Image (cartoon, rainbow, N blue to C red; front, side, top):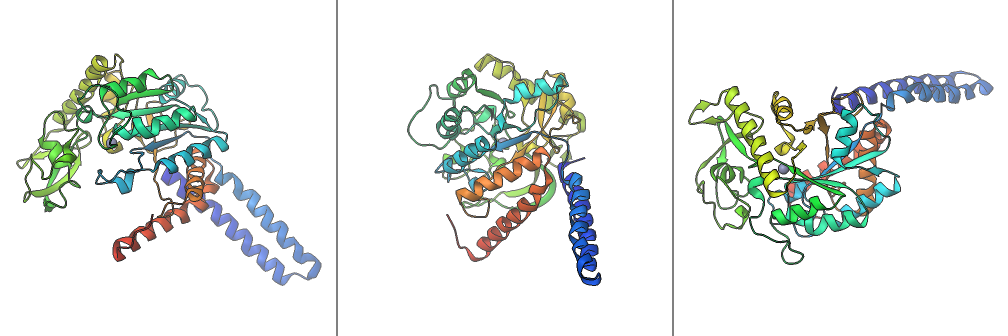
Length: 398
Ligand SMILES: [Zn+2]
């Protein structure tokens, strides 16, 4: 069962019991003579007690996924969806500490789960996808200050081919192998692969738009797909190179999850599987060469995989991969990591108190306490409403 299905089922059963007992209590209050009216309170309390177990599920582990952590992420066309300001990130770390959470590394967590050890209560793991330079410059120092373990997932083609580590200068771009190696050398941190090219592929005949000077960065997957090898500085171009302005934008899907449609021919499922195996194999070989480690975890680009993805990854020695839709409970497969994406601007604008409350609710819900959904759901609705309002009227907040 996915966590979404579980959440809806549990909340619905809880609400039904509470509503029924509330109705009976109200009727008792209105209809019964004075001293008996107080029985209404007992009926309501009884209803809440009966409904309570619906909201408490077996414990899970919250795996929180971040991307960019930067005060200035504007170079990323999708920064609004994935970038978190360092002040928000620090508030998250402080919130986790106040919650008494134990932050664990994902390799250790996977080994524990594989060995069938009970899921430790109140445990959280932190992930950082895409290998942005700001992870090294902004996130890692905050993680060290809070003694918090974390796993960084890098895509091979986006690793900056320069050598050395950069402790000042601009924050745009991606980490070098030396920066990734310095993270891996810190016992708190782990570096694992996020695919070779982070690519999307064309998947349908449908045309979804036309590339122009304003939108080509948003559809960067087309440049990535058509550019073999390094593309760490793709965003610095004034105009796209591999696929020119004026080209049509086809429907697309994740390269490691869906068969591609090229020149009207759909790739066979076997070819897709071979492509996935090549990608995961290349990650393994490059990590062994550049970092001297054999990768144990794999993060699917955009968290999506095909039905055979996990089998292929296991055959290549990966112990677990992302893309799960559950809560990492003891009865879920140990080779599947379910993650939640962490946003900034929990209410549609940045307010540190709300960022902390939102994170607390998201973690507790993932850990199994569904009462927090009663707070999280209206927060998510507010965020969505503000984003829609902003799109329509063009007003911006912090
Ligand atoms: Zn990614």
